[in-house]
Image 1 (cartoon, rainbow, N blue to C red):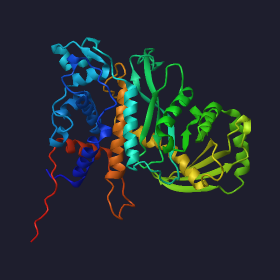
Image 2: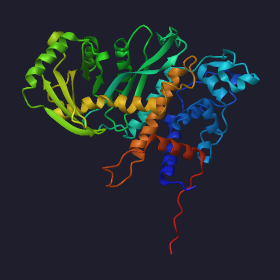
Image 3: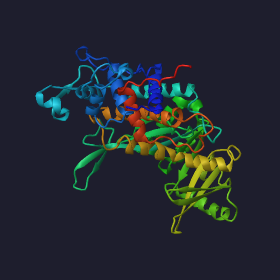
Image 4: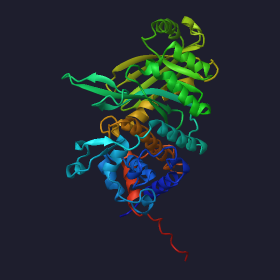
Length: 447
């Protein structure tokens, strides 16, 4: 097989990171009893993590991958790991082994493990440790802006047949049958080139994104205070209390404004009528999927302190005009509130910042749903498995995206028109790096 340079680069990248202290799972305590420790916890977690890196669709595929490890992959997974063992670890349960249950984990009876399930909070600490390692290696430097920007948004982890210990929200299908939707808040560093995900917090069954915002923001502040200066949210988290919470922490906010804040929206629209008589503060034009997209930014400080929002300093309006190849026009107007001083960012930077917020959906969430099938193909849905797998998938996304946007970028001057490799190609390279013996190219001897 003719192995390409990309395979060797991916192999070196994985070897360097998986051997580093941040990826040794030292934050995770072993939940198993003495009788369940035939394999080390580190090797089991490595199996799950490597399976996510290689985009395995099921625990059975993770087992098959673990059985095919070459010398490099064998440093992290020394032997085949059964899918039933991984299911036991994730679910916090141990099944009674029967001939039928060996082929169908879901059909087997279960009993509680000797000690306890895995703890999601420990995986949050592990994620934080890995991101601090990337931070120290200067992989998280902001681009196009002088400061870091964190975007917070809600994400669904799929429909379940149980309430996830009270953490999932109940719904009903068209036929009346119930289901439970596991939802979380996630934060992404949208100012960094690879847009890494920083943290995750489940949204309780009796609350919503707005109600969980303050707790989640405090967790991000505790772990990454000096990494960011500005936080962005969609309209579902925009409230006076949440804005005051961010401002009291000496951070800037840019919050989307919609009908859930009617007084502020009415004032913003009144100001827009005057703003439209002037040239825009900044504008951009780009081609996107065959369409031409014009964006114009208008800003006003006249809204400062309005409606007892004492920290509010500006309203931002982005007017978007999309022209299709047939000449049809589609116009949108989006409003945003911010406590940033007028001179902190230029108008062009504010327009770039607003567009950055959508990277958490377009780059992160889209990739997790389309490439990793996060919301449709969960490996395990019992106990805390959904939340823990979500955190591990975030770790895998961060590492693969770093390779895709940084480590595989060709060195030299001819990188202006370079595009990251396709996800399918990258997953194939990862599998080859783990399962094949990739040797360095032969260097001819001097004549």
